[in-house]
Length: 139
Image 1 (cartoon, rainbow, N blue to C red):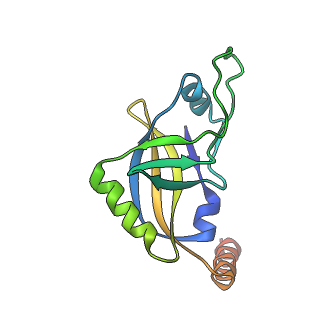
Image 2 (cartoon, rainbow, N blue to C red; image 1 turned 135 degrees about the horizontal axis):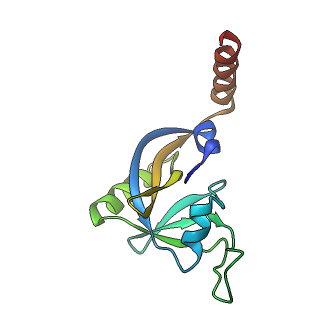
């Protein structure tokens, strides 16, 4: 199980990455193991010296019961204090943002790779499309 945010690599330059754990409720882990999740339009916000992932979609588990989870709730990220301070400093620089790059299983724990990213301009995106087409044509 690995969920990749393809839009992040297209819309942002990824400066560095940090691995974080995520706090999940009940049936969320079962939905993630099935691959029923999406990182599109997702970002990380730091408030009260805690990191939260905002707008991450995890589908409801079909075999679940009344204790099913909310699909787009804020989920807390598990990071060390030094890592949170570093992320907060980098996010405060103008033009930088915190974007989840991928979600994966590591030793039965769900991990999220957070990228410290800088937004691309339209001409950067056009260049990326051009290079991708050239690679495809050349084979």
